[in-house]
Amino acid sequence: MTDLAIPNNADLLTKRIAELIENSRKHVVAQVNSTMVRTYFEIGRLIVENEQQGESRAAYGKGLLKELSQRLTTRFGKGFSVDNLERMRKFYVIYGLNKSANKLRKLSDEKSANGLRKFAFEKSETLSRISANEDAASTHCFMLSWSHYLFLMGIDNPDERSFYEIEAEQANWSLKEMRRQFDSALYERLALSTDKAKVQVLAQKGQIIEKPSDAVKDPYVLEFLGLPEKSEYSENDLEIRIIDHLQDFLMEMGKGFTFVGRQVRFTFDEEHFKVDLVLYNRLLRCFVLIDLKIGKLKHQDLGQMLMYVNYYDRNEKTEDENPTIGILLCNEKSDKMVEMTLPEDSNIYASKYQLYLPDKKLLQEKMLEWLEEEDNA
Image (cartoon, rainbow, N blue to C red):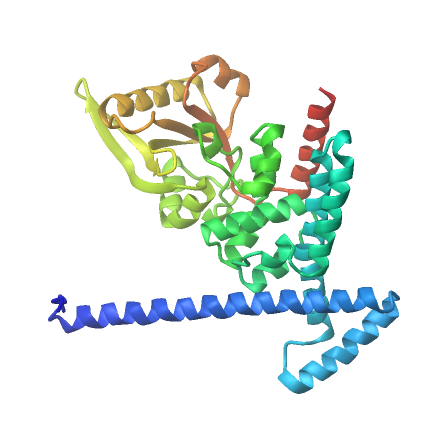
């Protein structure tokens, strides 16, 4: 019989048992949530299939949902209002019918003219599977809460919607966190920070961190610090606010970031230097040094960061780690000055930060203009 190590300390034992119970409850809640979302998806499917087989008039559909609402409410209680049934119907249309249609469209694009006959057969087979409810969408693993999906359904752009769904699943965002990322225009900011070929990847796989530039945004949105945009504050004030809101700051930085220290000191030639913030990125396996600058970025600031990065590469990083990244967060910068000051192969980046949520509509328009320019280039 295995000798289990049971702690004598009652406080420690109580703590371990409490953690076990809490984890068990979380698991039960997750299972219940998954079952509920799947049920709503199936209810939406049944409503859509009934509409397809019956009358197509809007008045008929509205009357049906009203009658259905009354019967289900009588039998099961709250939760089956006409509005909720319409949301379930929309849920299936977005995550069932539309996803299946997109899959067929992509399949069609991949077929050559010589394979049209084969494609026609495959399309027929796929449509048969859809009608039998065996399409890819019906086996979709719904990992988020119903509240998450209600919010996602309000996003019109399917690529943007897919991006936030993937990121919320991977980062375990709460609904509040997902709303904040949406309001801060994370999708548009990442899209404008990459090339056109990778924009579609955001919708298919979310943000992929493979090289230093993948982990950098411009701008960073720090509205959670609560600093008025035009107030007088010092670099030290900014740093203190970031430490006070460290979890929010790491979330804004992106995937894989962990905190190492603030005002981290190192010395050489009997001279002391301090890095404002030192982070580590687990995905890139490297240190990330951050220097905070109030006002316009100067070439001396870039030179100082270059020295910091060189020191860490030569004295702190191990052989199995990747080169250090340096990020200067500033109010204002000249991209031309940054380009002329830094070596072409530098791992140093200058990004603006802003203390307010961006104009999402303006960023969307800017992104569309950029994509059109890419197409015409």
